[in-house]
Length: 160
Length: 129
Image 1 (spheres, each protein chain N blue to C red):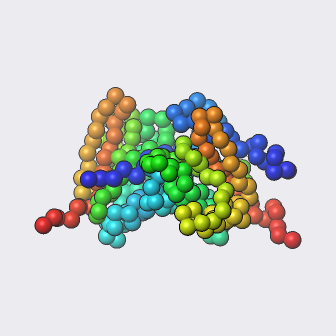
Image 2 (image 1 turned 90 degrees about the horizontal axis):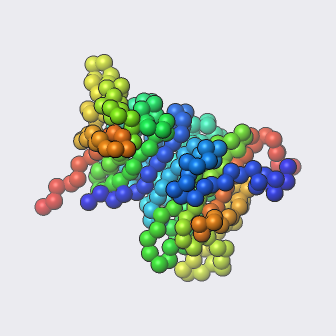
Image 3 (image 1 turned 60 degrees about the vertical axis):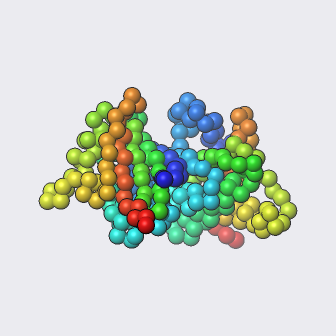
């Protein structure tokens, strides 16, 4: 299955306020958080709870926690340079996959050169390294969303 | 002054306990709650997760979270009419009584047009000089 085909499987994350409109897209877990540093630990532990419930292997759970931490940290650091804002974390459990979306309504995350004010620039490479799929999408309402996909059955795609 | 830190919604009973226990643990860490009170909060999370989804207005567990130094606050709901009282009853353990009311520092039932809510406070703010 190609990356494009897999990307099309990702359920549309409806705009805030319309999340009940499409029952198919209702996430298993939703978190609405202020874009403040302390929110990242809440998001991280929520996805770890999903991993606990799925009896996920420890290393895989660490990957998911790392990717979510990076995605949320990016929102906190970069999405609202002018002031306060909120963001949302959604989790869907599908057959053999966990899909996670982190959405903000600010500037989103734009790949940039590392610098004193932008951090080390490791967030995106780390997400790409540990996720099976990373996509960025801009919603019709101007929101910016990072979507992270993780296969649950590691044995289906063994390392060469 | 309590700091709001978000709202959690979980669909389906299978995920509720694991997610709520983890999230309340993180909230307790933010509040620098003592370990024994963290344990209380997590025991309550288990009891709530077992019962609250069946009493919620739409089948999902919804929890609003906030904290301040040494105190966490979480509000469950909207629940069905009478759901908050029923939840307290259902989490009662023979010989112990209502787990939530016994372990929380404050429990408040709120009734509104959207349904019932159960507000729970764990911890006490340090006394100021």
